Image 1 (spheres, one colour):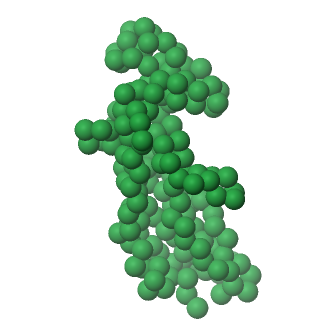
Image 2: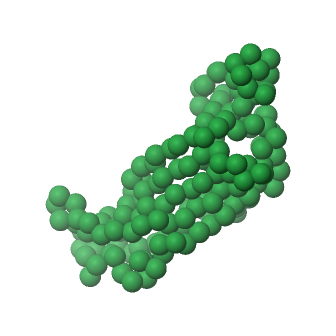
Length: 166
């Protein structure tokens, strides 16, 4: 039995859109910087940020890609309230295949972010040991309140068949 079924193929083109309920705010960037151990003054000192060509404080670049902060999603039992596709493939384990980010401009406290996720591809492959894999590729685009492009995130999720799961 193949993991790449017609039902899985039909996922290509599926979209989810999340728009923040409010402006991003200066505190979000400052707190995220502290949480990840990045003490860059661009996140906390407006004068310093302006001296470096910005309109004011900003946030660490990857903060925008953490949709759990603004997607207003319910918190599931595993505690992650960010974007997920909700794809469950029995007899597999889910593995993050990686992310590739492109940043177009720094986020500003007054930005209201919209994240648009789309499944762009699904493919079937096999591991070196012959276990079946399903690779789901998706793209997120992050825009501001005026539709200006802030960032893009290419993400890969891999479902690997468990022993006997073929």
